[in-house]
Amino acid sequence: MDLQRILCIGGGPAGLYFALLMKARNPALQITVVERNRPFDTFGWGVVLSDQTLANLRAADAESAALIGDDFHHWDDIQVFFKGRQVRSGGHGFCGIGRKRLLNILQERCLALGVELVFETDVTDDQALAAKYEADLVIASDGLNSRIRQRYADVFQPDIDLRQCRFVWLGTHQTFDAFTFA
Ligand SMILES: Cc1cc2nc3c(=O)[nH]c(=O)nc-3n(C[C@H](O)[C@H](O)[C@H](O)COP(=O)(O)OP(=O)(O)OC[C@H]3O[C@@H](n4cnc5c(N)ncnc54)[C@H](O)[C@@H]3O)c2cc1C
Image 1 (tube, helix red, strand yellow):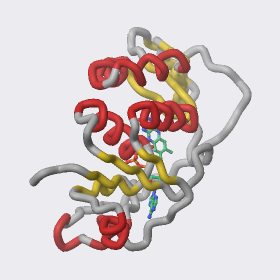
Image 2 (spheres, protein in one colour; image 1 turned 135 degrees about the horizontal axis):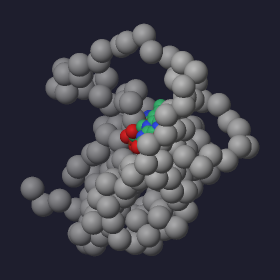
Image 3 (tube, rainbow, N blue to C red; image 1 turned 30 degrees about the vertical axis):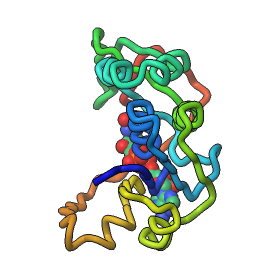
């Protein structure tokens, strides 16, 4: 197939990063990322990546990795609080960045490379959108609760195993000198 136009449905880290890597390697491709939120909306606050992941990002796209690295807060130690004990161990290497900042860096890099970004468009019909953009390839980058994956469940055959764990995000102004599990 002669691949000319790609449509990414969902502009989270996966859709944006796929788009920028693909465009960097194939500048002639027309790539559009369609996202339902606005560029400065976000859900969740921070993203923590290991040094190994950052090295992978540098190898894949040095420009965006440099911007991500500039904005990262780096920890080498992990501090665990468990049943009244504190354990600290060093030599791990983790970086933290705000999710919104990460998305904005990826969005800027996409734009610099010539990827088209379309915001505030909630995709209800992927086939109609693919026809509108004359897409040869559609990337379903619409996240964990992917509507596209559900729609084509017969083909993708997802195997989802719901467990009992609960999580909560809490905000604080406190700064931590180690990656902390409290
Ligand atoms: C509490 C929590 C903490 C986490 N912490 C970390 C961490 O520290 N480090 C780490 O690496 N990962 C972390 N993760 C995992 C990380 O958030 C996900 O792996 C990552 O966000 C997946 O990226 P994605 O682009 O696939 O999906 P998403 O980030 O979910 O992006 C999907 C995008 O698609 C858009 N979208 C969905 N449906 C439509 C539609 N119909 N039309 C248009 N747009 C649509 C959504 O608005 C969204 O922007 C965490 C996850 C959670 C829940």
